[in-house]
Image 1: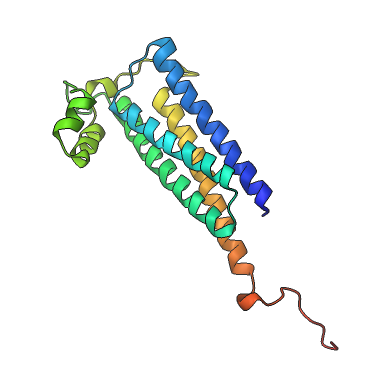
Image 2: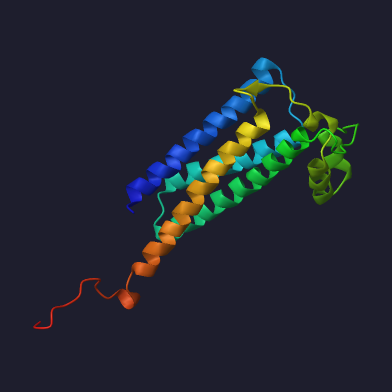
Length: 183
C-alpha cells in the first residue's frame, strides 16, 4: 500500500464525511428540521471522523501513523454507528418508553455531568422517536447508520490490511528476497 493511495483514501473519506455533514446542516438550516439530542451526538461523531480524515490526508503519515489515524477514524465511526443504531431502534419501536419532556441540551450540560447527559441522550426523548423526514423510505438516522457502517468497514479493512503487511515484513530489516543456494 503506497502513501499516495492512503492519502487518497483519507481524502475521499473526508469528502464523504463533509458531504454528509453538509447535508445535515442543510436539513437543519434550509429545510428547517430541528435536530434532537441523538442527531447532534451523531453529528459530533461525524465531525470527529471528518476531522481525523482531513488531518490524515494533509499529514500523509507512514505506516504507524496510518494505523493510528485509521484507529481514530474507526473509533469515531463505531461510536457514530452505535448512536445511529440506538436512534433507529427508538424510531422503529413506538412502544419504547421515551421521556416526554426534553430539556435543552444547554441546560443539561450546564447542570449535569457529561456522562449523565450522554446516558440521558441514549434513553431518548419524544423528539428522537418521531420521523420527520425520509428519502427512499429511509429516515435520517437510517441513512446515518448506513454511512457509519460503510466507513467502519473501510476503517476495519485498512487496519487489517496494515496488520497483514506488517506481518509479512521480515523481522530485523532482512531482505524479503530469498537467496539462491549457490550464492
